[in-house]
Length: 345
Image (cartoon, rainbow, N blue to C red):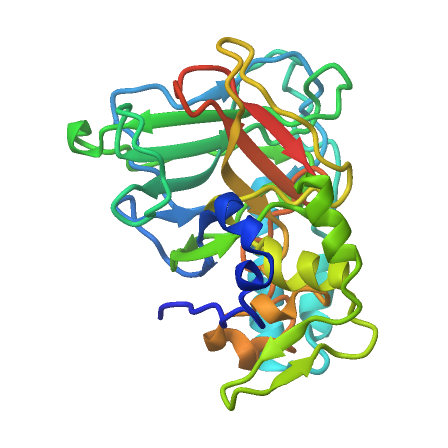
């Protein structure tokens, strides 16, 4: 089923024409639970990976024997999904609750040394035929995203390790049938549930603090937006819905997984991201988001999901929450082989 984002409450570029030059397109991926194949674009699905090529691994030194069993993470989600579908009011029964209580964090792989190679998790694969916003880099028509199952990297020792693979899908012969997975993961939220995608192109505008100062001042001065109606009259926004609040939540950046678009700098404020090789300004390639919507962004809920608003975990189909909840992979627009940056928000 396709997903359709409702029209924005108003044409913000008609109110502020200067925004027209700043608009960007984003492809909302709309991942939803399903059974993707290697030939599908997916989150958490099987990768189109050559049978004769080694699976990517993490060999960086860090503790890797303690955490949650990968298989048990998936089992817990299976139990919960079945339970809430069966009984939306009370969820798991006594037997299910007992089994869930036994799926605990622990030192489940004491045999693993700090530098033993462990399989990376296949997070997403995107075919350009499915995702209009995927850049045509010449490196291939298929993007595959992997990450380490532990957030123990970087200078702080609390960062993620992500790897990107660009491939020409037609050049892959026999795909790998049994795809490896790590024994243990640091957090269940680093394991994506299998999801099919429903890509949709939308228009975005820069985060409020990323706008030129004069535009910010004009938006701040708006006490309530006027929303044009079909009958030719105007209606003001809801009481207390000022210019900045409505711009941020309803008019600028879409929530959820997406390719391209603009970065929502809700935690740190804008940071200039430049390529360390050529000094080009990095652009967002992929945004990985914990939620498809929250209480502040219900206006972005697709029309087809309106009835699911009150369904348990309907807005977290992938089960993923990287870093602080949102991870942006920013890449060099000139060369896909230049180093990329990770931004957490």
